[in-house]
Amino acid sequence: MRVDVRALGACNRLAEQGAKQAAGALSDLTGTDLAVEVTGASVASGEDLAESFAGRESIGVSVGLRGGLDGEAVLAFDAVNADALLSLLPGGGSMERSAVTEVGNIALGGFLDGWANYLGKAIDMTPPRYFEADGAAVLPDGALAGDGVFLFESRLDATTTDLDFSIYMLPDSGPFRDLIVGKTAPAATAGGEANGGTTSTAVPYESLSTFSSLAKEGSANAADNIAMMTGLETSVDVSRLRFVPLADVPAEVGTEPHAGTVFELQGEPSGYLAILFEESSAAAVADAMLPMDPNEPLGDMAENALCELGNVMTSGFIDGWANVLGTTITHSPPEFVHDIGASTISPLVAKLSERQDYGFVIDTAIRTEGIQARCDVYALPDERELARALDRLSES
Amino acid sequence: MTRSLSDDRPDDPAGNTGSDGDAVADAEPAAVTGGAAADDPGRIKVGVGELAVTSDDAILTTSGLGSCVAVALADERAGVRGLLHAMLPAGDGRTTAVSRPAKYVDTGIDSLIAALDDAGADPRRLEARVAGGAEMLDLTDAVGPRNVERVGEVLDAAGVPIVASDVGDAVGRTVRFGPNGRLVIRAADGFERAI
Image (cartoon, rainbow over all chains, first blue to last red; front, top):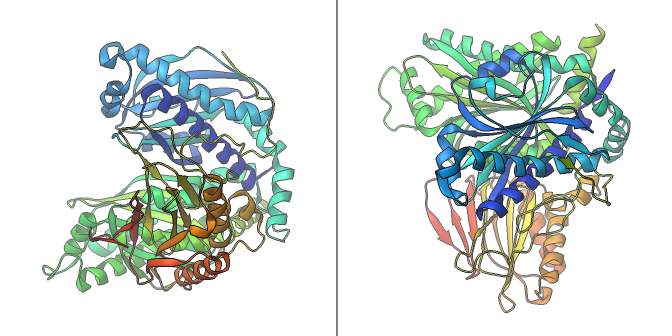
């Protein structure tokens, strides 16, 4: 059985449209403008998910789904944002539970309308259940059990108020698998036409879980290399591979100034890799690496240090990929960037957009003991070449 | 509860379900605001590969321009403005140029002019302000300058004069386009200038 990554893309767009509906419903209810910032589909193992949700407290509602789609959908707010949400609602904070339940119900209803339309089948929602949850308990039942579950995640952002929340939908893997496989043929044909070629982006279903290994292996290697180079104890915080519209990537990086390095990858797959630190983190890391205090926080000396660090991290990353995929990948020399985060990544996204609309983004936060620093790694491989490598892997 | 079907189920999974009064991508040509509360002119965020049009006092913003280019068009007499955030120079007949015209400079400017026309602007009175198109990286063969060049060609062909621009170099930019018709550009260090 084969799954086309473009079919995943279609589902992702559906999730995005659903999230827009949810945002619209909530905007009407609260009188506050809400915008969908990012929608991503991830294929992750239960273990990865548990890790990435550790330490978060959430409130929200969940509903069970039957009919056109089986599974569960959850709308969750970070508990720290709950007050901001409640202050927006008619009746204020006096009716916390019922207000959150009502909001969740309306938003999830909006979210599922889009899917019902696409599937041509009604989706039945069970009555909403209010919950307060620690860590990964927020995720739909069953998310932690599987080894390769689909999770759709949208982040909504209030344009005038500090409030964001997520919608997670976890379709039952079996039926959902049938669904995306069912859509594979037309999606693949459309993709072929668009690019005037017959290059396939279909990969065996089983290979989808290999995506997670890519993220993990690469990040762990990068962290090891930092530790070797700096002597600092280094750990990987979060490592997840998501499938997102490329146009959303700059918004995800955000408008805060960032510094870091960018690389072009050659081989199977080719693509780009960007390692971005917020300014304070960049300065702290460079400071820790330099034998003496730099003259200026992010001047030439710091630039050299960050390039060197970027080099070893990138080597670690692509070695990890090459191991998993059994291919050879090389990288260009580092190019230093220091500007608005979204601006630094926009040319990479533009270049890749000439060939594809979606990208695999690897979220990795690498934490170094003793200094307050974290960075995000954006790995943007060519989807056809990645699909081809995964396909070959499953045949061998 | 049952989520019911609408009669016009789209074949395209993207559907056509963008929320009202917001920046939109995909097949919808543009959003026109007008529903915002009277005392709050509102902000409309225009994402990458999106465009938006307003005929009220809303501030159109787009952030994190690197090699991407922002094209701000206004018909001051009609009080109609629009902002495009395009990523690549030319659609070249790609299918995404139809489904998401604002991704490309050429199809994006055409869509923006059409949307302004629909909102009551006279295309012959439009004036353009352009920002972005930076050369952020050596790795990505001058996509920024190519975007800027294409903007000049397409606006010229449409007969729309460029009255001001802040393009090129290796700097990121965030812009906002308010009712006074000036484009305010902010760099990473917080420095602002209006053109």
